[in-house]
Length: 122
Image 1 (cartoon, rainbow, N blue to C red):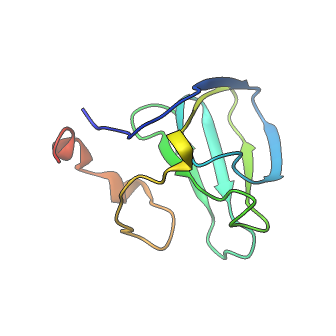
Image 2 (cartoon, rainbow, N blue to C red):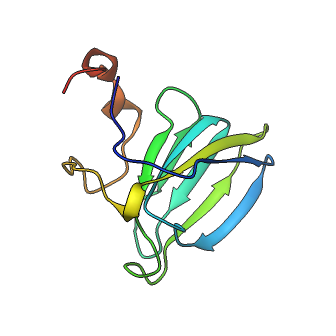
Image 3 (cartoon, rainbow, N blue to C red):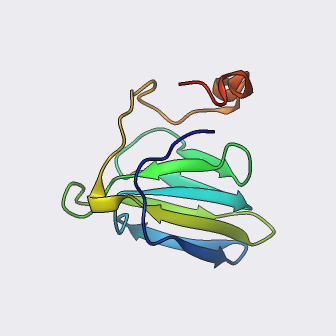
């Protein structure tokens, strides 16, 4: 089991299929767990194709582009044909969990191959 750190005020959203969430900032430093559906997240000025996040096993991201640190935030679309369910889990006191940056770009499917082997390890 992975420890997400101190979290508070869990929220759940059900986003309609093919919804355009527009350009926005994260409301708080928070984990977002997409349990179903599909999200496409892009960052203004980034030349990559963004990240497609499929709900389920690898649907956990951390959003830290709050208005106090990011002028533009990110753009989110939900291009799937079914609704997307997302849990928003802000960290206590806006804490950003200890982490290590492993890529300067979005991960792709090949980047997640074999991750199950690391589940539960510290």
